[in-house]
Image 1: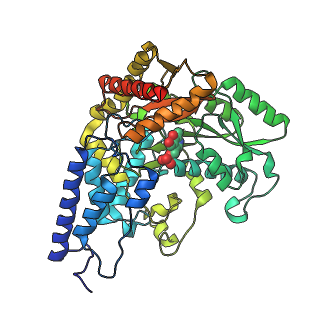
Image 2 (image 1 turned 30 degrees about the vertical axis):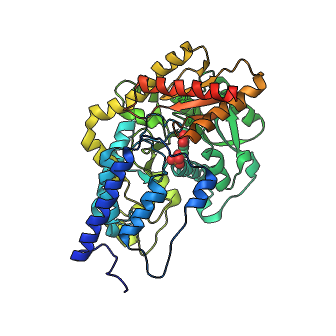
Image 3 (image 1 turned 60 degrees about the vertical axis):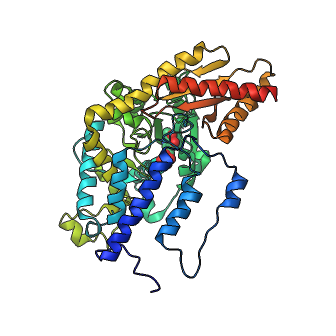
Length: 487
Ligand SMILES: Cc1ncc(COP(=O)(O)O)c(C=O)c1O
């Protein structure tokens, strides 16, 4: 070997190198956190030109590789902790989540089997039990940590599909899809996350299987239209595989009427999956927990901790009301979760996951809960919801701005009015405001479409951001708009 053994292990040269590498990296992070810019503002073309891989026969060594990562990655990263970084459901992370990452990465446990992650397996199982309690499910450990909302939604829809076919005596796992597939539908609101469509395509039923239910003026699933769509499906001889309700739509933060949806579905034996990737944070809220009323009634739930739980990416979970449905995806691999092991009650979590090798992301939530405690966790979640209400009021008072809808979670949808432009050009003008802000490196405001209207979006997750910070940001929106207008 041309250098000393590069593997992390007990040897002194290894632990010294480890400590140096971690110290060099964390010092660079501390400096980066103090950069005043939200983004150093380089374009796609500039970054393509600037960033190159230096893979040479000798290797650069850790120190130089880290220096290059600082120069080419860190400095041009988006500061997600910056008060003017509000475009997406993309959170700044807890300090303790960083400490958890150090432990997760150094130990490199793999969650597929007990013999690759003994203490980690128990921690994840206990956390799933605890999450079920928060939801109001019966005691148990049916559920698993996932890479995030998309994968959790996939698990919900897959098990809903397989349970639907199993009721007709058919095993999808053994025999694949069968029958007149065009007649099988999933219902979700027109504001549900696009992963419903993508996942249905992946599950072999295509985008055509997704029927969109209209929404009310608060972007929530309209119950009258849901009833009408169910009746229509019956008249067309179609069968409903699942209803996906959303607790916290991506843009408006709308929460569908979970209790009513669950009651309607129960009458017809339809699986309900709740995508609570965003709104699930309210499980810990002191002020807004009642928004999730009825969540305990549904068959499966998506939670996402890399949104308003402030964990580093990736960190999500899937909860399954009835453990028996896990049988639908059971697979026994002799080398991981043998029958012998299972008979002795050895928990090999590969049985509960779509992944095989899997990160120990649960530790981040575990340490976050312990470090912050109930009160502080509730405070940082509630902060965004309350701030959004204050910001909405402020936006409504500004003559140049228009509030597109009342906030429900922590997002505010608005647009710049531009009365001097024809209405048809206002959409493009708002898009250009968003682009110009990012290009300037001073702010990242979302651009999205709501009810056919192009608008700007602030997602106010950051618990350190104040109304004053947002007033600064909105002044920046107005001055950017004025600059664009005069150009
Ligand atoms: C409501 C909702 N569901 C699911 C997802 C997908 O989550 P992830 O990006 O963690 O896969 C998102 C992402 O923003 C979302 O807003």
